[in-house]
Image (cartoon, rainbow, N blue to C red; front, side, top):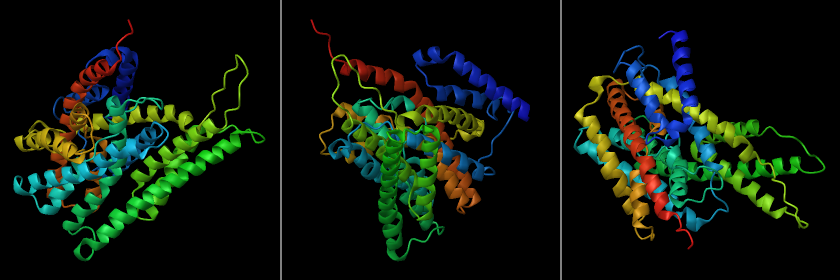
Length: 425
């Protein structure tokens, strides 16, 4: 496709989505399904007007997916309910650690014993497919900073953390393939890639978020009364935190999420502590914050990025990409690995079974998986193994968009109706 044709396609798609937003919102499918169908029609599976080769364009796709995941993680972080409570965060923490490890192990076992892949490749595939996606799962995530729905909170918080907690398993898979130094008996991997990288990410993100919140709060109030560009501040926080974290060999995704959480919660704490007594009939004016001021812009970027990347996913697939092997891996992830890992990870927590079931199903795979795959390719993965993992990953992501996309609205509506309090007589 020429540049003019690309402008025409994307522009027409934006116009259609903008004009039919209300219709699509009421329909049982998600916007990602529409983008994917358009990509399949114009791509090699349909009219063959264009073909995006993820192997040849792995550097470009890595950069695009990296930026999109960072923006999505920031948006998820600033919508987390406040104040922070370890008791409430226990469930997503278990999902992002224990359930993450179980999913990686189950997929690695399938790849090694059934698909005949090397153990390192199996671990790498498990790490690629294990994290849930903060980009494509918008319909099951927290909708706004005041959303207190427990299921949405759990899925959003898990997606925010497991995009970082998957990184040690990616490095483990690369190490078993001889592409990363694990140290004697894996000691370097444990100390550096797991303990140091995780702790440093949380600390750097938390300190940066708190510092920006307090600085912005001080500048906005008397005697300074500065007008701040919240969009710039949000993007700047992402860039500084991510760059600093990567420089010290820690996990930038995890740091950006916790920076956004710390930013939001600190601003809310400062706002609650500044309320002066009001006279009769007076109402407190809303206090502007960086987190809320930058959220709308980030969500718009997230929607545009979702359109572009899902369109490219549709343009990567050929009809012969749909092998029984690839479909089998996808179904194994959706109906075995994810539900089992959730049940085991939440064992003994007292979580309601309906909550566990919904959480076990809505493990959407998407842009984060594509990023980890491109990251591995850029770090020396062999071409035959790259092609194999590309095919498996793309089919898993595509089926996730379809299966989770057609089920999310009916199931969430059913949960909402069931949880809605009955009207008073």
